[in-house]
Image 1 (spheres, helix red, strand yellow):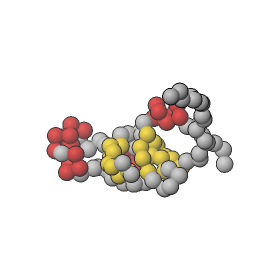
Image 2 (cartoon, rainbow, N blue to C red):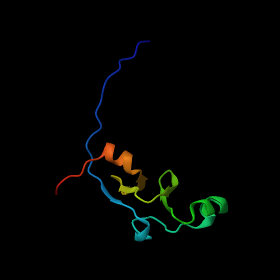
Image 3 (cartoon, one colour):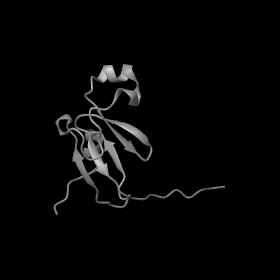
Image 4 (cartoon, rainbow, N blue to C red):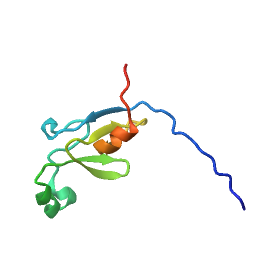
Length: 94
């Protein structure tokens, strides 16, 4: 069976976002400093409470300084590394 391969472009979707800094603390769904029971004591000691934690639809994720917190089209929140954000998104004027 031969399949037809096509090309598609992702629809433009406007998102809300902010870049997280440790000094912000608990904001926008980020828990900071995260609790050692989230990932275990060894991980907690390794990062010395410099990371945050956010619950997403896929489970919990670490949030590092400079990560963008994105609110998706259904209100879900998730982190995005700065370099990926810059390659994927552009700011718009309102």
